[in-house]
Image (cartoon, rainbow, N blue to C red; front, side):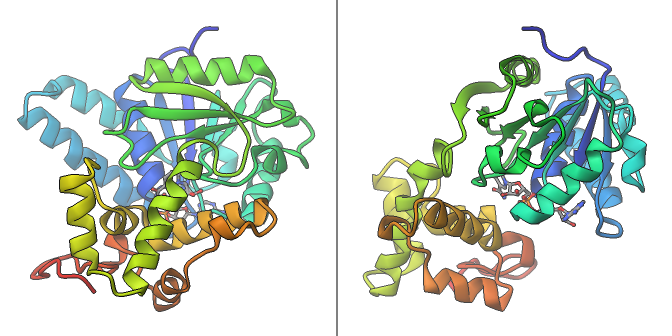
Length: 296
Ligand code: NAI
């Protein structure tokens, strides 16, 4: 199955950490990208930040100046959903909430053409459930990127029960064309990576609650002795505690309250406090100017 043609329009809905990363990769691969977000200023900030990343890549000799200018020019901010009517692929990267995602796709179905593929970057919500209320659920597929999108090669292409295999194949080929290493997976709770990763976070959080060691020590042990690129606490800070906590809740509920996936009260409190990690300036560590990255 062929990838979507270079130059086709990819709409990215939600321009937070993931949406911005997806837009950066798609535009650099020759696709025209329309970015939409409900938060005022979010899209303009994302496009400006992507421009800075391209400039850094040029400085490091990993992208030509012409390619950077052309890629940046392929990024377009749109103020209303109606403006994504000509998209060949829409990738949703908004809040991790089933009802909100369903509402968005219902709106999109009234806007896009019949051949447009609808993709969700959900970390853990059933792709089958997101697609179910659509008039044409067969066109919806999971396209699950990892954070940070430009650096992480894996993309899980998730088929729900109704997903047309041809749609999954096109998304798989398109992810390959973007330099990613896609894998096909079925819509099971947490899919592959987020399922396997739950105990990594959960046991780290339990160890911390039992005061076995500090977050920094536990991270160092997993990094230096366990061979992980990041320990659980710095990784949760990168992902965002709001997102990570929602994923755990979603997997826990999907497995009918299986205690193996019980969400952490400690992490719930961090979410209650607005300590989301890097994006809010504080998580298990402090970020930003003058912060000493000490454990919270
Ligand atoms: P984020 O909080 O950085 O960005 C979400 C963006 O969506 C925000 O800018 C928000 O204003 C916007 N938004 C919310 N509702 C919207 C709506 N109805 N229409 C348009 N825009 C809306 O979140 P992040 O981390 O980018 O996550 C987005 C999605 O990607 C979630 O489903 C998450 O589970 C998933 N994901 C997150 C990963 C991570 O490491 N953070 C990794 C892989 C997937």
